[in-house]
Image 1 (cartoon, rainbow, N blue to C red):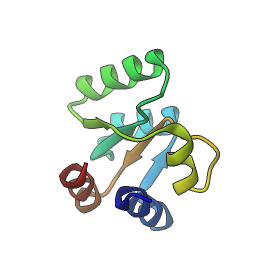
Image 2: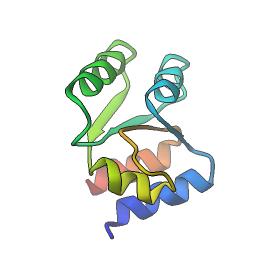
Image 3: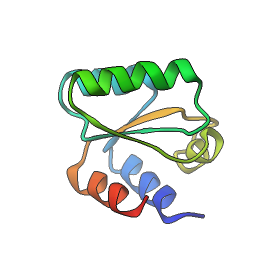
Image 4: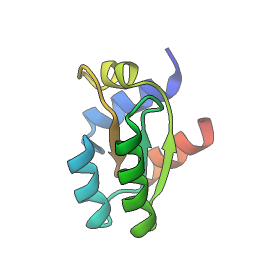
Length: 97
C-alpha cells in the first residue's frame, strides 16, 4: 500500500481530515482546509464542483487514488472527496504525490 494512504489513515485518526463533499465544502468556506484530495475516478460533476469551490476560496487540491482505495484507507467503503486540515500533513501529501 502506498505511503500516502497510510498518512491519510493516521490523519483521520488524529481528526485532521473531513470526509465527503459537503464536509469538504464547509471546511473550504471556513478556511479550515489546507488541501483537498479528489479521487481520480470521482464523477465529472463532483470534480467540477469541488474544483470550482477550491478556486473560489483559493484552496489547493490534487487528484489522487481511486474511491475504493481511499475509502479503505479511511475506514469507509468509498471516498470521492476529502479535506486535509493540517498544514504539515498537506505538505507531506503534496511532496509525495
